[in-house]
Image (cartoon, rainbow, N blue to C red; front, side, top):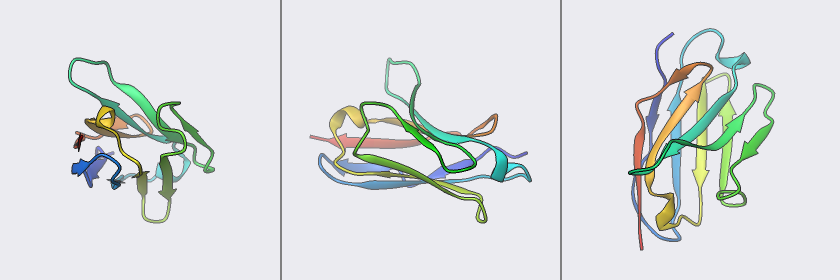
Length: 111
């Protein structure tokens, strides 16, 4: 199973929005939980949001009400819609599907 590939990161002003995408592969994607994690400089990697194969979601308190995780099993895609971005959301964002991790995509929020 190839590792997932993230895209959609970039530089945005505070209050702006970004949508991250994660292209997964493998035959078991539809039954695998997936999630987004992030790691800021000098900090540990932390959970942002997860979604089960059935679509149940879980969010870190810091992003509740601002971020939305979703998935399209037919396309083997996982998405993270990020609204009302804050400078503290600046980090490398990683996609996880099953036991596979992507290489990450940088999100930078300027104040």
